[in-house]
Amino acid sequence: MPGWLDSKPTLTDDQTRMTDIQLVGSYAVCPTWGDGHHTGYYTFAILRDRCPCAECTTRRAAAGAPAPASGHLTHESHAPAQSKETA
Image (cartoon, rainbow, N blue to C red; front, side):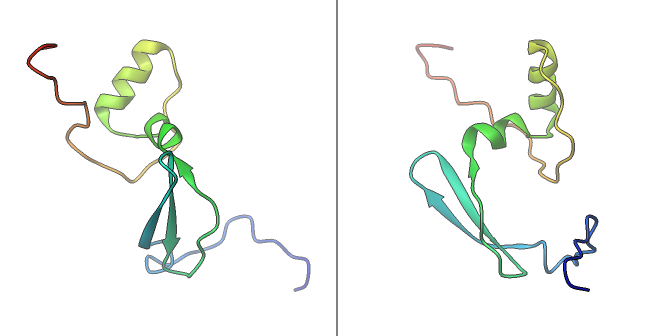
């Protein structure tokens, strides 16, 4: 149907699978998805602010920031390693 926009498209796992990722300068990444599109980029700051892991959620709550709406990433920790001078 011409001019019709599906606001809730049904995408398969293959379509939403990341197949490649390119660095954009030193501040962002641009993924390529299984359905072939590669428009847009995600800054490291945005990715950090939207991280759904327990550690980041706790950090945001302590700072009074809202939790991310949704996410699929999981990881144990991504706190920077402490040097011997700061430990």
